[in-house]
Image (tube, rainbow, N blue to C red):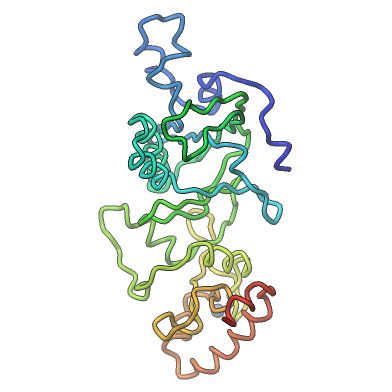
Length: 290
Ligand SMILES: [Zn+2]
């Protein structure tokens, strides 16, 4: 699957962004030599394109993508990349481009915009070679499938992108919190006093597949089409519990409250341990034994 996505043709960026639905009016108008507008340097060297209210487009290296459980995933931290470049004296334009990629993700999250990806392949500059020659793209193609931002850490910029629209994707209270972080009224979720690993929450939510791991009921469907459950640490982090899939379950909102405040919360914790244990793989067990 991943090999099939390797781009074989060298298309013009202009043609690809236009194909994705990006408004290229300024691309044409801000360029004096009208005939060469497709090579407008104001645009064609960018790594990402943002059209507020409509979509974002990211240039992603095929070599940075991985295949996991039948899905194509790209992980990275454009913000950290920008910072690395800045600290190592890279050209300012490279720092700015990496920063703008991070900014594009935030716009997409805030406005719930579609994410399109131009998959690129070629001679990639080593990250360490900050003053070396530019990377050289040999092939680029627009992925016909949209992508989904499946995890984003607003504090660090660490991001996971997954190919495809994850219809009925699973979200929890922290996704809501992150979305609202950018809104005018910043909502605090009282139970979220610890930094959690987004990958753990993501793993648990996909394990639960939208069903409460205590009562088995389907989480409610949100206006966005996503299914909502709350992730819960069986042994609280404050009591030394691990931020690991073996100690985390996905619960319906009611059972989540019960797990914290119900008179049977100890009995609930026993059941939840059994659930999380049953699903955990060998690696999880090892990780928790240390
Ligand atoms: Zn439940």
